[in-house]
Image (cartoon, rainbow, N blue to C red; front, side, top):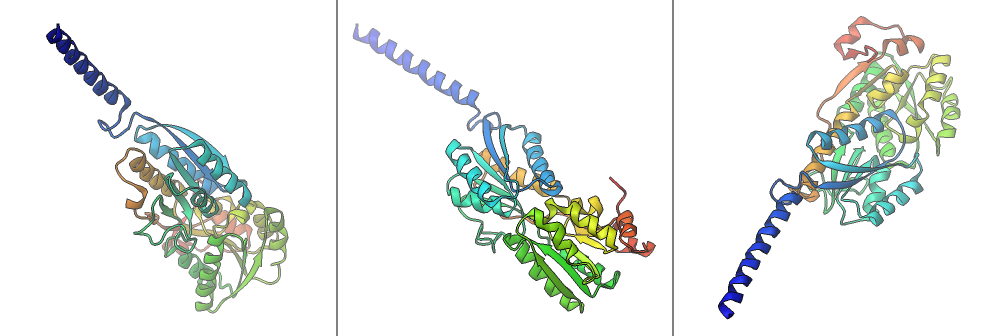
Length: 332
């Protein structure tokens, strides 16, 4: 009798072991890196404007291309700092698998809310200065991502403004509450002074102040430069309106805003840095790497693009030799 029971016990144990192995394979665990597991990713985008929209699109496409099944909880802070904190706390409460933070305020809020959930950021100008990472090659315990600050981008644009437009006074509109904008304005001022030009700075606190700020520059500047400031870019149409009516050449810090009606920008496609960030997220979600093992990355490409229609609308005579400095925008 005992021998019989012992045999049954061994058989049951074997069945349970096989059942356990089978359930592990079906869940996708270690057999395929979790590629068929369903994940929840919280997306915190600071403001609604073309560049950030493109970055979010690129991020989602990367996860789709890699075959991950993901439920996205997509939230937009509408350029409100308080909203970024609420969004981040909600993501932590919902125990999402990963947070995608699009722009510096969203990344800062996410890092303040959790030191455990992995965070991937993009559209961040100065991740070290913002306190998000210690260094590009030492991102931290649970955060890494891509920066939108290519070292040569601003230099190319300022060179064009001072050498081709011959601007001596350059107006800059920005939100001093955005850390990424403060960094850019300091860089622009240094570059402009190196070319014998002066910066005329106007700070705004919200989008409703942007048009008045642009109007305040009329008669005081030869050109206007808008950095990748979330507040101002959200209200860019009002700046374009002033630039067109008063014939002040307008320059911007990224290509999507250039397409809307600025003379030129030196930059890259935000879709691409969003996609780069998405590939980082794939490695983290599938267990290949931890955030701390992934270096912060720069944009992979850079170009100067000139909008002929905007240049003519803002009082400039387009020179064909400009094609040697960059490329003309074809309307696409």
